[in-house]
Amino acid sequence: MTSEGIARTGNNLDPWYSNYAERAGGLAASEVRALFAVASRPEVVSLAGGMPFVSALPQELIMSSMETVMREQGPTALQYGGGAGIPKLREQILDVMAIEGIRGTVDNVVTTTGSQQALDLVTKLFIDPGDVILAEAPSYVGAIGVFRSYQASVVHVAMDENGLIPEALRQTIAHLRGQGRRIKFLYTIPNFHNPAGVTLSAERRPEILDICRANEILILEDNPYGLLHFDEPAPNALRSLDEEGVIYLGSFSKTLAPGFRVGWALAPHAIREKLILAAEAAVLSPSSFSQMVVSQYLSQSDWRGQIDTFRGVYRERKDAMIDALTEYLPGLSWTNPNGGFYVWVTMPDVLDSKQMLPRAVKELVAYTPGTAFFADGRGRHAMRLSFCYPTPEAIRLGVRRLASVVNGELDLLDTFAGTGSLSVRASDRYDEAPPADLK
Ligand SMILES: Cc1ncc(COP(=O)(O)O)c(C=O)c1O
Image (cartoon, rainbow, N blue to C red):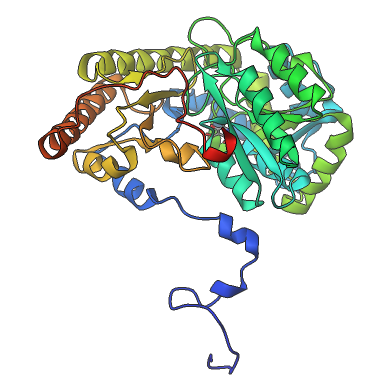
């Protein structure tokens, strides 16, 4: 009983424990979250986060964009706006998407509070508890979190160095349909995948679209890294090949700055109305100020040139990471991305990246364990390394420290079990065996 005499059935940690909605059960903090607080100390080389290197931005230009917005349109910038976002920015977003072959109308663009909010809104619109969302194996941890919070059942589909495998998609769909499951959409990150670092090949794109069309499965194409290529640009977006079957998500977080929290969705006309209503219910309107500053920046800057600058910075860092892995951890395997922020590293079966993390942090290096990127517990033998934020020198140091942790673990296993021979699994897929019910 509380002091007011109301009986509560909570626990010592949270008196409201039994009052939460069922879906709040999906909002579990990651087991490694506490470690990441330690990992953010300056002496730790963090290869864990996905923070863009915003110091490479022209700070003066950003400041002058803010000043111009306030001087010329202050009252509007400080006011509520429309639920779909400001029309001028939505026009400019069409120019950004045109680089990847997308042709759309301003009407169908909805600006959101980062693409993370668009992920949330689309999931809210389509998912009832138990509905299936197909996602690559592995997939973006932040999307898995959203899907869980709406009680979706996430089923992974295998990928290889050319991205999602069409045959695996076909088989997974057939298997789930055989079980009478309801598949609501395919969530895919076709370019410079987070966390796998791979890109869906141009040849596979029409095939993936055909499979989804034939099975009446909507595609949610999440593309925050698409313009950050190192050599060849990524193939044109899935959305450029199909207007009706794809919701496309974009973001200014990686090509400008995540602090503005400006992303967008380009949705088929029929869906876009519901999306705006859901956005209004969530936030009334996205930040007018942020949208206007981003719009001003796009108008007065060489934003394409700035993206080239970012590409140069990230390319140098990616090279530093691949060189360091080659030198210090030649027994492991990894992806070599042509863009984006991440390398996916596969270790010998005997190693567990989650168990190894405390030791790594003690040795002053952090990474994200592979299990974070699966909804079904896979990924223990893998990890994601980010090269976006640390300098090339720090990346080298971090990988050297990581090598000492990996080799230390293997020595220990050799000593106690005689099993630690450095053998990398012969697999060209980035997942382990799927759970028994999907075989
Ligand atoms: C694949 C993917 N989608 C969405 C997001 C969310 O980005 P935003 O900052 O636009 O919300 C991220 C951020 O890291 C991401 O990697």
